[in-house]
Length: 117
Image (tube, rainbow, N blue to C red; front, side, top):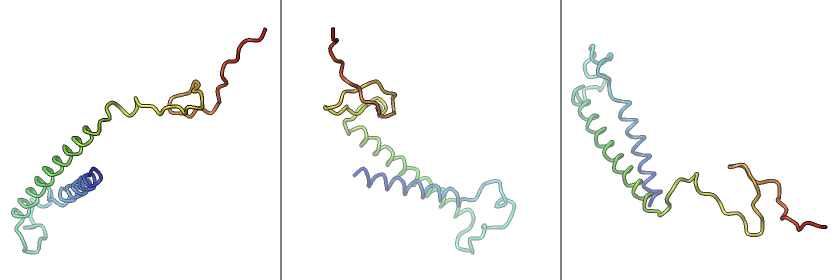
């Protein structure tokens, strides 16, 4: 379920980027002349801008809904706390020695032997 929602979320993000990039800017060459901006008579410049604005708003709303759904799914997994605070348990047959965080313990630690007289 989460994987499907992540894929949908990524598709929405890419579509929103694409739609925003194809929109004509307000104060560029498009406002100085040129009519519809090369749409070939299919739509006027204003109608195309209104359509792209609505498509952007719908994609943004869907993106927000998918973000909230992913956050809710992540919250319901039961794992609380930061990933950095969690550590992997040491194997049962090996004693844990001093180590640098994030680095493997390469030097085996020998158990303390009783003192000899």
